[in-house]
Each structure stands twice: as C-alpha cells, then as structure tokens.
Image (cartoon, rainbow, N blue to C red; front, top):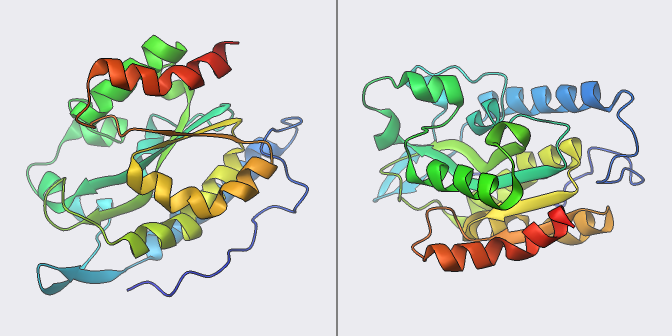
Length: 232
C-alpha cells in the first residue's frame, strides 16, 4: 500500500509557468525529469487487496514489453514534449490484457491501436483539433498493471498517490497550455493540483473517457469548448 498522500514539492521553482516562454534548454530539462520519473516507475512496487488477496501492481516489463524510458507506455506515440496539448488518461493496462501472447503492436505504439479507447481518442483528436496522437503528449495517471480485466477497479487512494508521485511532475515538466483529463478517475486524481496548475496558466478540461458509453453527439459536445479555445 502506498504511503499516505503528502503535499508534493514542486519540481520547478514557483516562477515556472505552464506556458513556456522559450524552448532554450527546456527540452533537455524536460527529458531529464521524465527519465528520472521513468526510473522511479520501474523501482516502484505497490501491493493492494484484490478479491480478498494481497496482490502486486506489476510493470509492463513483467510481461515482456520494454518501456523502461517512459513513465507510461502511452507516451511512446504520444510523446511530443513540445506540444501545447497534454492528455491524461486513467490506467494503462490490466493483467488479463497483457498475460496472453506478446502483442508487437503494443510494443511499437505503446498502446493497442485496436482498442476502442484509442480508436475513439484518435478520431476525436483528428476531427475536433486536427491533431494526430503523435502531435501531443499523453500519459496515464496510473502507469502500473492492475490485476484482473481491463474494467477492474483501482482503489482511489492509488490514483491519488500516483498523481502526486508521477503525473503532476509530468505535467509541470511538459508545461502544456491545455491539459485534458479523460475519465472520472484521472479527473479526480488531478483535482488537488488544479489551483497550482491554473495559476501557472494551464487551461484544464475535464472530458469523458473515450470509451464512455455515451453517444457521439454527447462526446462531441463535451469537446466543443476545447475545440473553440484551440481553434480561436
């Protein structure tokens, strides 16, 4: 079980703004921070109760995949650290999803391109913002592998602690102008940091999870404010 959440120290000085003034040496600094977080992810082992048993959250590398340089494998494709747009999804994958045959598409892309979440998200980015996934930076609040299937729950406390230990530092390192939290879990995990991020000039949009069981019309409506902001 992770320690009780504590107030995180900012990874940059207080004057650091979410809207970058220049790119001088910021790209290398961003890469250095993300590399440190990736190493920390590999060293992290948390246990929790699942169906009455104590189990361990696992790493993608436990299943034969190699994402050692990334906090979340999702950043392998969505890895544009200079983008003004950052996506934060919920958790990356489950034991049942990864315990079958090795999927070379997952290794190549850092996600399963045939999964509905990814199909819908790529479609929304293209239709609403004229962006491809590789044009943005994307991550998962919870970068570890949960037990069970893709819909298995993760205790809220682990989302919150993962956001404190990893996600907030990713956001501050990438410094996007627009931050999208996709799904209730990612939104709830980052709410404690919103004042800090908004004060730095970061516009935050809470959007439904791409696989949410809502109509295309409702999904488009949810993205409309962001579309207006980014295309103005």
